[in-house]
Image (tube, rainbow, N blue to C red; front, side, top):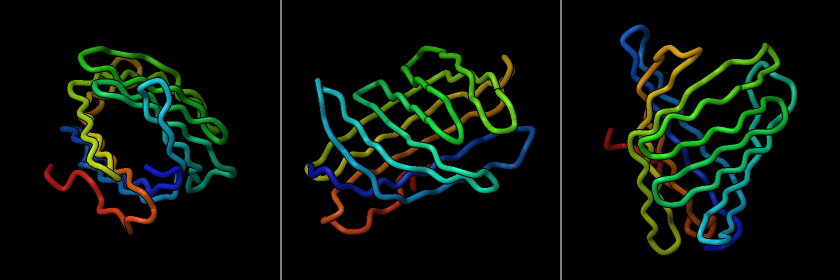
Length: 152
């Protein structure tokens, strides 16, 4: 796969307490592979917040690591069948979150990589939502990627 890629992400949160939230994003990114791990690097802007964050996604089968630095700061680790706690630092304050990854699946097909993650999200040690995250990474030359996770 080439260095210049398009990243399409779709996240869906399910919660009994609130309405389901669906978030979709498509952005340009840089891709590389090192020591059997894949990396995707991209900039993210936030509505209502000044500045951006540099995001680095590191992944391999059954593992995904997301680091944001800038307007918000967080290091989120998704490890299959393991709970990971982290502080999510925003301009409005810090939030303690827990990520309990149930399933992480990666499928690599030529010039395209699909990643699907099922996880439970906790805030301050209380279950907030069951979530799904899907990512489609493909070479820019291959055209506009379809948004992943349409099989929810």
